[in-house]
Amino acid sequence: MPEQNLLEELTWRGLIHQCTDEDGLAKLLASAPQTVYIGFDPTADSLHVGSMMQLMMLRRFQTAGHRPIALVGGATGMIGDPSGKSEERNLLSAEQLQKNVDGVAAQMRRFLDFGDAGGEASSHAILLNNFEWMQGYSYLEFLRDVGKSFPVGAMMGKESVRSRLESESGLSYTEFSYMLLQAYDFVHLSREHGCLIQAGGSDQWGNITAGIDLGRRMLGKQLFGITAPLLTTSDGRKMGKTESGAIWLDPTRTSPYQFYQYWRNVDDADVMRCIAYLTEIERAEYEELNEATNSDPGRRTAQNRLAEWLTEFVHGQEGLANALRASKMLFGGEIGVQTDASLSEIFADVPSQEVSRDVLEGEGYWIVQALQDAKLANSGGEARRAVKEGGVYVNNIRASDEKQRLTSADLASETVMVIRKGKKNYALLRFV
RNA sequence: GGGGGUUUGCCCGAGUGGUUAAAGGGGGCGGACUGUAAAUCCGUUGGCUACGCCUACACAGGUUCAAAUCCUGUAGCCCCCA
Image (tube, rainbow, N blue to C red; front, side):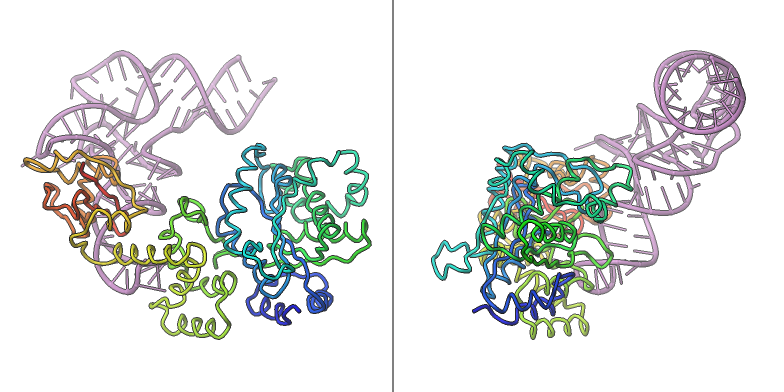
């Protein structure tokens, strides 16, 4: 029997933005285990934090005893969803798409139980790719089956279409048709898998309701939709993006350390929402953390908890341990004598450059040159300036003399020197 | 096709024939403060083993002891007339 309080939980977490027929949905969820689906766009071979809300949403349903379907849009990804996009998208090649689908699928195992370990089968998650049922669907048939049930008037009314029509970039017929594909997915899943609920971000509302309408027309069945708010910062930007790009779940794209740091630096105004949306931290603790943030924001109790919870969830205990160790070292004091092995573990993310060991001999290795070799400065002038300004550190000890020469006495371990410019820009020099 | 204007450093924007590597602002980068924050304040922002040298104000020439500043041509942008 499914748990009764799923909707209650989603409500306190603020995860319900819009919902069709709330009472009906509540009854449905209470009556028997249901199947819920969310679509994922395979635009890259890794998910980023923008998808985490969706995955956690499915996970919450699964925990409550329902069956989640993660639908990877192999077919719809070939078209491109115009929702929330200001410009026509580039189409992905079939090979690239397959690669992306594979990568994304692997990451989902962190979030959802696909039944690999056995256990009760009714709530095992299913991974599907809509390419399976779309690839053989002929255009003529599709127009007769699906297109027939789509009033253009209603399509034109959708926000995603309207905003694009009004913009300069316009909207191609291909993207205009996207809605039909997603709507049909819902119908297909309800027919083949008994899926009556589609969830998604609030930007999916138009596509979801399109599917509900289509379900009524084609199957005479009532389907349900529920959307979550988008995870944005208090000033309205999407979360999960930094100047240097998205925060990925793939540790080779975004290391556990960077992942951890991202969450640790979340603004006070956003942190509680992140905890509610992205973690499974219980309500009682949530209230405590909220209280701690209000009374003593400087300690960032909530940020630390958020960062630790998510890092451990996504990267495991070991990933978290590494992130914590690196953080302690990078933001701590001096780097004492270390071994190469421990340094390279702690500074796994830090770019390193190799330099011939000979430079340390004789009169030594000029620090201005070292900064350039470490790629922390683009020119000698920039390097000199950085030293003069007191922003350069060797093994976390400030170096303020631009004439300084480095010798083997400055090595932090057998072959490595840690150079830093400013607060957070580290680089390793390996003398070989 | 004719006429006029404009073109400055990462961006915007001042600029007198000679202390102009170029005011001011933004952005970037450092530093202080702080909570690895925000706000604020300070410094810095062409290159060079460097109290000096080199390269720079669309591009190419010219006038001058001296040019971002004057002249000619070329290109980009803007406006007006046909």
